Image (cartoon, rainbow, N blue to C red; front, side):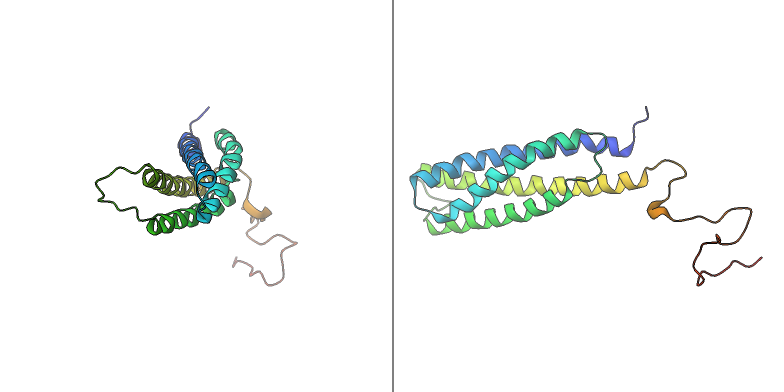
Length: 178
């Protein structure tokens, strides 16, 4: 069995989706704690996105290892990349409102948890964006590698000996000069 370019993408796609899933689990844990302990409404949205990501990325990791994967998870990656970007923005705004300063001498566990959620939400966005790029490459390479004789969209080829269009071709198709 020959090793193709599509086969080379599959391990990277699995690892990137695994990292996105792990980042979503960390964000889910930190934001679930924040929802139960604080009254911040801005952490509910990242919590929902983290829960949806952990649910949807388990099948996505399985599909990314399959040989017949032809870019089926591309819409999922597109949607979740934008959702994670919005979650990162919400968490960054929440941290800006809570007086968490970067150069503060004391160690505050609340600020550390907020920064952890913000950092891992950005990592989830980054890994989802990387998965989207790998899925685009996978879609591109799966279209290039088709068996001989198959043509995209069922188009008819000119017969090499005839030198003219098939009989059922539309009338506006120009006939080649003989």
